[in-house]
Image 1 (cartoon, rainbow, N blue to C red):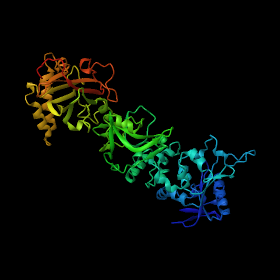
Image 2 (cartoon, rainbow, N blue to C red):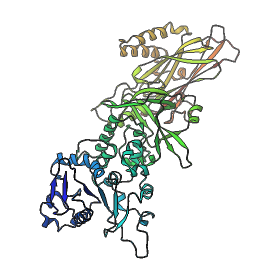
Image 3 (spheres, rainbow, N blue to C red):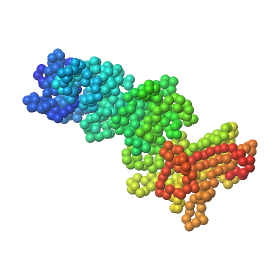
Image 4 (tube, rainbow, N blue to C red):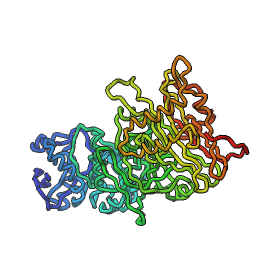
Length: 597
């Protein structure tokens, strides 16, 4: 550490300084004095920035301090090692200073008519010192700060201005009183303090926060926004504070993203975030891997998976709302869904939702997406088939036995994607190969089995209606099936079963029943597929109807209002949409006994 001798104005190097010193906090202007410049005092005095150095040393000397530190001239930036050490140590250097002089260059002198030198913080004027990234830690770290206007007249101290400073910056007063309380503030809350600040270099928006989070990492100027990603990765190694993921994006155009934020500005809404720890449950865990962020935390269902962030936000009326984020599954891992939205909810909200049971869940979330990855996952997500089960009479239940291909289904088996093979390096005109997927389930009444069914969903390969979605459903009560469902289950349960052979087996069965070869070209028998009701009988002779309905879905997985069903409408050739398949079961009240199929 280089210190300026306040008497001789010479730089002196200390490996572990024990001398008391003053430190300057300011905003950089044109004509600052560098480390090289300071070697020649005559040359240094000709620069506009020297006046700040001289005044700092003069005030420090008058207060009995032999040394002072100024960032412009006390860091040899020619040495990357010294620069890295200085940036990683800067918070500690400000914290260990005897006093810090905060020079507000655009603060005019006290008006002759004013008698309160501290009134400058009461108005709405924003001084540049409060907008810069580096001055955030320079405000928090020192115990003692004296504020000076442009003419170097003292305009208050950190202790006397504490509440005004808190209102101005959003920093909690107890943190301003003692930086040791920093660790008690959630990550998102600390990020919010930097959300309206800026730095000249993109990388410095991350580097200026190292001391705020007690993180050390190498400086790589030229890496751009990647620096902020690295900061979050380092935080993930040191903490299990899920508020790290409580950010939101202003632009609503991207429907999904990686889990990590791209800037502190995305935490602007987190000023009142409070973290809570429920000691009755296991604490969350997460770690950075080569596949993304591996998380073990509480998840519940709100049409999509919601990751509970174990923190609350205080509202304007003094209430607290829990915070969660939506996740959406892809074959590459989960992604953050609707990143412009932060789900806020109360305990009543979770209680009222039928799917809201919190479960400790392990999942991997992609940490960031490049344009190519976003495009690829977008194709997957836009063609999701959501599967909803509706039991329309009391006593009915449905239990999913298996899905296949398993990798193409979400972990909760509620939706499947529409591609099996993606092509990379083959040009943008090569579309992923359309697929089909299956779900096998038992239907029960009063906990006694009625039938076993298989649902097949897919995109047509026919040249007349390529990529047209379809769904088929049949039960084991139909003689035509001849044990097919049981043989399918047996094959699917074999861990070494060739997935391609299993696919061909199902596709062959579907083609045999629904492929229309009567015309010049093969295509699906859409008329037969439109017959979407089957009737089954339980052991007592009670009759039940099982319906399956295929419709266009919105991005939230809800059927589009007014849609009549894809299977009877013109095929969306060359386009992909999300679809929702609803399997509903009800008692047959027609009084007719119909042969099961």
